[in-house]
Length: 619
Ligand code: ADP
Image (cartoon, rainbow, N blue to C red; front, side, top):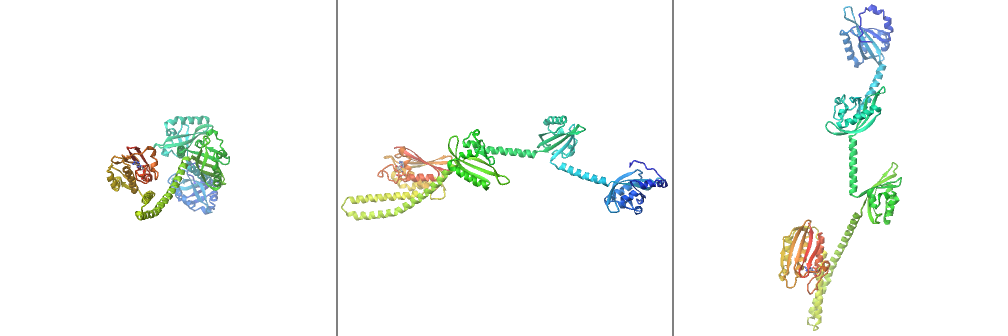
């Protein structure tokens, strides 16, 4: 019923003549007084509310209202009575006798009396419950749908043919939605891309087929975003009327891809720098894939590989083949990783090399190994270093044993020697009066030999003791050398020798040992004095980056070059005892002390000119 329909003033008597129409109307009709109390209701009205007419007559219209519609209802009546003589329409709920509600479209108007005052309200109600149910279901669906569209990570934009935004479930990053809707989509693309995008739209328009592309452009704040676009035509009656743009912000994915690529190339760089090869054993196919570096390690040209496991096994050294097979078989059963170190025979040079590898088994859901992937590198040098290290440890152990032995031996030998010496003395006293001229000479020989042996054993004992000091100390060599000079004072005086000492550094060392070192070298410098030449010994030190190089120079008899190496060996002497006294242990001690400090000892010498001993001490 139209709300614009004009109501004419009718006589109630005349209205009654239409009573049968009123009664049989398929629309529920009621008449109410101006204070909204029902005075008459037709059959349909009563049916709809499940009442008899006498039950509704005298009842306020508002008493059937749903509590939520009360305000709306009151306002509706107020508007009616406020002079309007037009039909007004509203939708509201009525409570039926059963307590259930029905939705009804309510149209009402006012019938005025002869002087134009509101006399009667005419109300008509149509049951729209079914329509309301459909409407509500539709609304629900629409809400769910639009919620899904809005919440999807994908931006859906509808454009008209000129590229203006008609709808967007999401706006662009950093762009308010109001600004985006109604704008021309091209404006948001960088200038350089616009031509390309317009071209794509033209293709979609002409072919009526969708296409997709990736692009990258900055947000208003300049942040670069990557997008994936799917552009499809919207058609109506076979004509393209606009476009649907589905756009996905793939910045995160792109970043991940870039990060992945970066770490991949970094890994490749690292592997290349470390000369590590990559290989993979496809267990199901029983095929082995080797990369370029792995081929190089085995001495293969990459094209000459058959890629079989047997080929790899054939390259293993005969002594290591069984071990690898056993270790793999063991790890294959349950372990995650398989790491090993084996010898191979290189294909090209038939050279034996050590290779090390670390690998990981990949299993399927049934716990069967499907793949073994790993890295491999030539570890020959590492292995050699390790072997040298092991040898050094072994050598050190043997050395220690030897030291202990020589210490004990020399210590224990002193005792019987002392006894021999004492008895020789007793014998000498006893045979003092004996007339035989040979006896005292023989006894003298024995006594001297015993004496010499005692010295040798004492020196040997000292040699064995070297390096027993635990911690190195910081030592001022100027002070240390003063001590040495004091120890040699008598010899210096006898020889009328000159000792020149240049400024010496502070070093970290075993002080007792360094004292012995200087003492032996200076003592030799004085002892091996050239005949007729006053002895001069000069001590210096030179700063050489990572080490100090000390020198002890004399102007003595010199040494022939062919003896340079020999003189550092224990008991090795170049001169008969009657010319120069000594045990032949001094330089061996020096060498041991220098080695103990991680340094080196060497010499320069010219016969009859003099000798300079050098030794280095690391800083
Ligand atoms: P020793 O001095 O007790 O004989 P060393 O081990 O100190 O034993 O020296 C070994 C040998 O090296 C000496 O016997 C000597 O022949 C030679 N030698 C050592 N130092 C000098 C030197 N400064 N000048 C010449 N010869 C030397």
